[in-house]
Length: 150
Image (cartoon, rainbow, N blue to C red; front, side, top):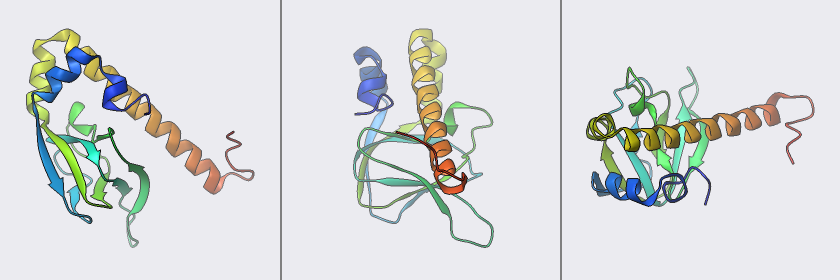
């Protein structure tokens, strides 16, 4: 379990509160959850399966940036105006997940500052971890001696 998974990132009382807004969904492999540049109006927490985050590359197929699995957050753009996706996402296997209405969660966070702070910290850790992972992958691809990661 990474520090950004739901179970590790949110205290139990905030996790329980968030889960009241979730609904169970299932997707077959190859389903596009969202597209870059479109409205970010929901997010997911993966229960089973994998989701690939990808970036549109003109004239080529989308470049996979990261693969996400159990307990991980899919989508954080809903948290920040203008609420549009910065990447795309596609299921790479059958997926079961909890889906959340982003507006409802943002409204709850606005009403309850402690909950809102916990959500913001969680999203911040997710963004930080994903930027770090992307940096390492880019160094491995393009740096003369790789990332030098241990």
